[in-house]
Image (tube, rainbow, N blue to C red; front, side):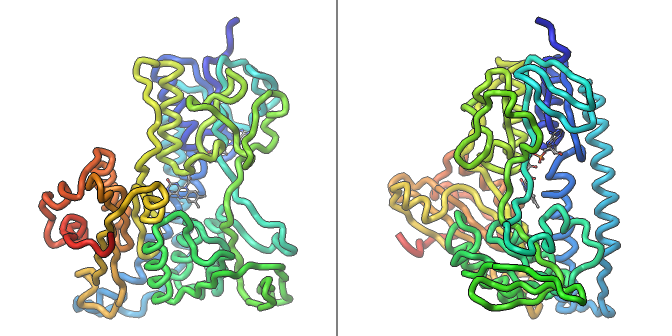
Amino acid sequence: MTYDFDLFVIGAGSGGMRAARFAAGYGARVAVAESRYLGGTCVNVGCVPKKLLVYGAHFADDFEQAQGFGWALGEARFDWSTLISNKNREIERLNGIYRNLLVNSGVTLLEGHARIVDDHTVELGGKRYSAKHILIATGGWPQMPEVPGHEHAIGSNEAFFLEQLPKRVLVVGGGYIAVEFASIFNGLGAKTSLLYRGDLFLRGFDKAVRLHLQEELNKRGVDLQFNSDIARIDRQADGSLLATLKDGRVLEADCIFYATGRRPMLDNLGLENTPVQLDKRGFIEVDEQYQTSTPSILAIGDVIGRVQLTPVALAEGMAVARRLFKPEEYRKVDYRMIPTAVFSLPNIGTVGLSEEQAKEEGYSVQVFESRFRPMKLTMTESQERTLMKLVVDAATDRVLGCHMVGPDAGEIVQGLAVALKAGATKQLFDETIGVHPTAAEEFVTMRTPVSS
Ligand SMILES: Cc1cc2nc3c(=O)[nH]c(=O)nc-3n(C[C@H](O)[C@H](O)[C@H](O)COP(=O)(O)OP(=O)(O)OC[C@H]3O[C@@H](n4cnc5c(N)ncnc54)[C@H](O)[C@@H]3O)c2cc1C
């Protein structure tokens, strides 16, 4: 049977774009459908605009610290609409680049909502297209809780387009997006509270990292309220919001921002027309090669709910393209030692196992830790401290995890991830000459374990 396309990709986000371009590069006839924005979540309402806002928020520190180095500045004023319109322009530029990349690689771009009709057919804009393989790369969507008055709250999609910087913000959630947005709003001058129903945010990260960030956010004036959750939201006559908490307290804010998880984007996708199965959490179930329960339908990225990060979706997209159209170059995605950053202020960078995970996995661990005031801050009023931590397997001397809270932690941890993937031992870290004077050199100069 001949098909219109060898591969029909649904969703031109991180994973879909990568799979489409690579498949076309291998000679396949590829179509990609996109209903919203080229580049998907990461480019439009995720990593990229978020990092731009974090840069914006960081200037508050820079202005303050500059005084210690002899700079006298006038009163600094911040204009939210300038930041947002410049951010929008940059995203439009990136959308254009993505369009060119697709078109130049020979992919047929179909703009509109795609719906699967059967195992080999997709419908879009009233037309049907047949394909040998269909790849679902539809990503995720913010999950809003069903509390009364939730319609007055916003999620991350809206936060990037607020018309004004709210004066008082309640951020609800304990994941990395909540922590990052709390840092953004606080840095830009909003009175910011972060509410989380658990004991401490950033579950899954190393405990020392979580506690250190808690301390640093407190120092910066973010009001952290753990074991707190909203029961209802009411809008008052003057437009402000009242959040009644489950423990009866009432908080007032101009914006309530939920970052309480993301669900897979399966809306009107037509999965009911196929035998594709979902897992217990509602994500698309796939095997090791991203194949669903229907052999011709594959799925990658946030919609399969494995590791919801752009570089992971890219790797999965590439793996699918290779497996289908260049099998001799196919390599399985390695999910171990995935480095990540949280772009809170200060940043977190982490790779490998936390101390708690290492212990749970049965390792007997040695822990090395260093806490210090970064050199740049010694001539300023800032009391911010950096944390660096190594988790080492006492039996083999292999470094199992590197963790950092401090400026540029994400930049620093990328290089360490290569070392950990290569199986570096603590001795190798010790034998590596430091770059002086940097904060990063601390990772190769920690000699005495703080616990073992
Ligand atoms: C606020 C925020 C910050 C983040 N920060 C980071 C970060 O710093 N680092 C990092 O690595 N990751 C970050 N992420 C996660 C990252 O954005 C995702 O992991 C990544 O975008 C997933 O890629 P994907 O291809 O699976 O889906 P997406 O990028 O979400 O792409 C899916 C695309 O499919 C389209 N689509 C959906 N349904 C249909 C349909 N039926 N027909 C046609 N098109 C459809 C959507 O419009 C979308 O463009 C962040 C996410 C958020 C929300």
